[in-house]
Structure formats: structure tokens, C-alpha cells
Length: 615
Ligand code: F6R
Image (tube, rainbow, N blue to C red; front, side, top):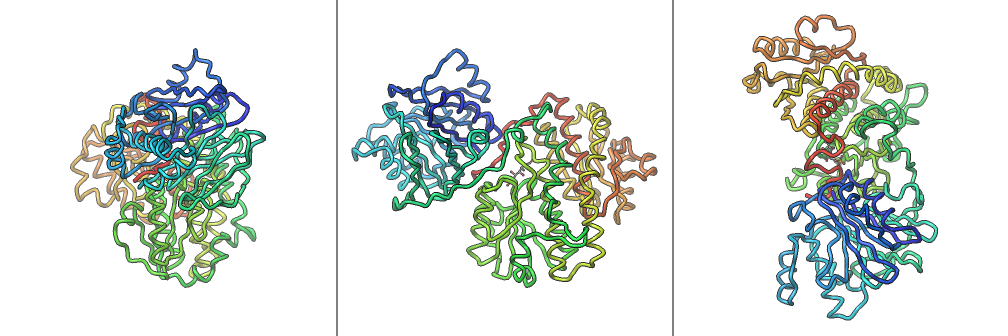
């Protein structure tokens, strides 16, 4: 949700900033801009509506001198996406430039006060209010930029990650964070700032994650100084090593990041499982569970909180944990949980699932659960993100950077980790038979090969997708473990193709959605040969007898479904609880190719952003 980048050093800032903005573009692409201070102190700002490539086009014939600057790619909250509302925003006298990720909740009040002091505003953004406030404080208190920023932030209610530079000062960037992430990369005679580490990769592997309510002075001549916004007390520098390579951030020969990420799943699942299944498949170990053994043995209940795709993974997690651990599990949207006055005790374990580790609602749910005394366990992808830093314990899914806005490899990684968690917990609680653990663990060890086999459906699905570009609506039906998979398939299709799609538990179809079925409404039926297969065959018959077309996802040995369904996609057989991981593959590919045939930008679908750091 908005990406921030900044640079100070010896390179041409313009180049570092534009490259950084490309890497952050998944966070928002309504508009982009950069501000650079030249050595002579001149401050120049360039902005453009739309993607970073538009900004590059308007800058193509401009040689911007200067080795200090800030940049921003926007996901609009206040004010429509246009050139004017794009960041960086400048203050009235044009002496300051600022980029901001987050929302200033009391901006109306601050704006009114500034108008009384003679300030005028040229945009509708909350960010312009903050930069004007900083200028006002700097002028009235006759203080330096750091003190003015700090004083302004003490008056602000809301969430922010900000970076500010000033005319006449080619040596300093001031940054601060509250509820929005900010990483500082420390190189040799150069420093980088960014919303996440991706713009820093390839320049340095030394990073400091700014903590909640901290600010920093990034100076050309002095070492990095971090302090608390509240009392200006210096903080200890906690330098960490980045373990992401440039190759991981590139498309690697694929047309899109989404396709690359779909095809990476054999490897990402191998990374996700590595070291977690031991003793030739007889034992599952997750250190976050083993280290907190007593908590997991004595837990009364598990509550899982998440949003979007991660919430779908949570629904699958609920079933597998209940099955293996004989423990009640509830799943809540993090956004509902945080305002729902939930009943949580210190005997509960709250699991928070998030690919980005920055989702604002999930972070707020974690805080609430902690306040109520629960033990909070995080399942996250981005190493060092806010969620893993704010939970009591947890597990990374280790699927590598996910850049396509639609989540693919993170979903299969999340379901894999939830299954490992259920097995590990079931073992220590002695609620799962060793044979069961071994059966599932062995199938997980083979999962990279199973997914490789499943990906061979690619060409069939590409052909099939072409026949569906006419559709305005789609129905996805599944049962048991695959009701959430149906929800996920429908979400993938709607977010990247803009076709309306609904996921439904198959048996519920007769209670309403069946009224929608006609020749214009295709259905995707998830029907692996599991305990509920026979029931789902009945649903296919009901759809066919009403003229609807059916794409069925069945196991390889299934010959009967071909008599009923219009198209069959055949997948390898795996234990029931692992079917969502395998079935996710054809669903991702189907959504992908339908969207491609419709000419959509699958990596950057309209109105979406990958990291939802606002409410
Ligand atoms: C869908 C998608 C979103 C995210 C949701 C939560 O493809 O990507 O629905 O799953 O915004 O994000 P995380 O997992 O980062 O908390």
C-alpha cells in the first residue's frame, strides 16, 4: 500500500529511485514520483499519474543531477489518482518534499489550523497537510528539519512511514514510522530507505528495520542515528542480514511475475518443507511449536486471523488442525476480529497468517489478542516484517518474494505450513496416529514432484481458458477441505480478470445459487476422489440438467466424470488434507489465462495493492 524509497550516497539518485520504485510497484501503481536535491541545493520534483513507466517516460529527456532523493509509488487513499495528488508533496514555500505511506487521521483538524495561519493547499491529500505542518513548525520554532518533523509527528494521529528532504540540504533525509514499515539499507558510503527490502537488494545486505514509533536521520557524513519519536531517546542499531537475491526479484524469462510464481511452486514448496520433516518422514518439527511445547499441549482453542487469500488458507488450516489435534479452531477475518470484541483468554493460541507480514488489520488483531493474554503465533512469508516481529513465536513459509499482486505460491506455502503445524502439534498432544503423520509427511516430501506433474496441465488450461473469455460470472464449488479452495479459485479469477466469481460449498448450491445457472454461467467443480466425491457428482448433474457448463477437477484415475462434465482437468492423487495444495495449481492457471486473454495486467490488477497497510 504505497511504496517509499530513498537514497543518499554517491550514485545518481534518479536511477536508484526509479529502479526501487519498479520493485515496489506491487504495493500501488496509481501514480509515482521522485524528488531530488542537487549539490547546489536545488530541489526538483517529478510526478506522473499511473505506473512507474509513465514517470520514466516524462523523465526520459531529463538529466536529474543529485545523489540524494526520495520516491513514491501510490495506492490512493485521500484524493483521486492524478498528477497533482501524486507524491512527493511539497510545502507551501517549496522548501520541503515528503513521501508518505499510511493515513493521517486528524488531517482535517491540522489543515484547518494551518489555513488559519495562512497556508493554502493544492491537493486533497493528508500528506500535504503533514509536510505543510513540518514547514510551519520549522519556521515558527526556528529549528532544524529533524526537530520540526518530530514535533509535527507528535501532533499527528494515524499511521505513517515518511521520508522528508529539504532544499539547500543535499546531506540529510529524515525518516519515521508508525504502523507502516520502513527498512534502512546500510552500504559503503551510501544509505537506502524503502518500504520493504526489495529496492535495497543488490546494493547491500545490511539492513535495519525501523521499529514502531522510531525516526532516523540519514546523513551523508554521519553514521545512522535512530531515536524514539516520543522522547528522542537514541535506539540501539540492530543490523540484520538480507537473504534475498536479485534473481529472486526478476521475472526469470516468464512473461509475468504471476506465471513465474505459479511455476516456482515445486521449488518454493521444497524450501517450505526443508528441515521440517525428519526421521525419514516419521516426525514433523516446527521449532516455533517445539520451543513452546507446553503452550501447545495445554491450549484450549485456536483462533486463526487473516485476510484475503491468507484467510482461505486459514479455513483449510482449521480443518487440518481439528482433524490432527482434536481441538476447536475458529477462523476470523482479522478486520472483523479487531472490532468484534472477541472472547479470548490466556489459554488460547491465536495464529495470524500473512504473506506480507504488514497487513494493518492482521497487525491490529495480533495486538488485541496479545492484550487479552493469548499466545500469538505468526505464519508469514516476508522475513523481518512487522507480523513476525510482533508475535510470540511463528514459522516462515519461505516461498521467496511474491511480487505478482495475486497471491499464488504464498497460498500453497501457507497451507503446507498449517499442515506441518497440525502434524507437529498433533504429535506433541498425542492426538494423531504415527501412521497418519507418516502418510501425510511422505506425501508432503513428494509434493514438489506432484506439483511439477500438475503443472503439465498448463497447455490444456491455456486452451480451455480461451473458451471462457465470454463469461461475466463464474461459480466455484467444493466441499470439505476444498470449499476454501473454491473460495480461493473464485478470488483469483475476480481479482485478475475482473469477472465476477463466487465460491460456494457445493451442497449449499441448491439453497440459492442454483437459480443463477444457465448456459452463460460456467461452474468449476472441485471433485477429487475423497470422502465427499459421490455427493459432488450430484451437484454436477444438477448443473448440467440446467444447461450450465462444467469444468471438473478430478483425480487422474477418474473416468466417470468425463461422461458428465464438459471439461475434466486431472490431477495426481494425494491424501485428502493435501488436495487444496494440488488443486490450487489448475485454479491459478485458469484464472491467469482467462485474464491474459482478456488483456488484463495480471501482475498489477486495477485498484489492488499487495501489501494492505491501511484499514
Ligand atoms: C489475493 C491477495 C490478498 C491477500 C490479502 C492479505 O490474491 O493477495 O487477498 O491475501 O491482502 O495479505 P497478507 O497475506 O499479506 O496479509
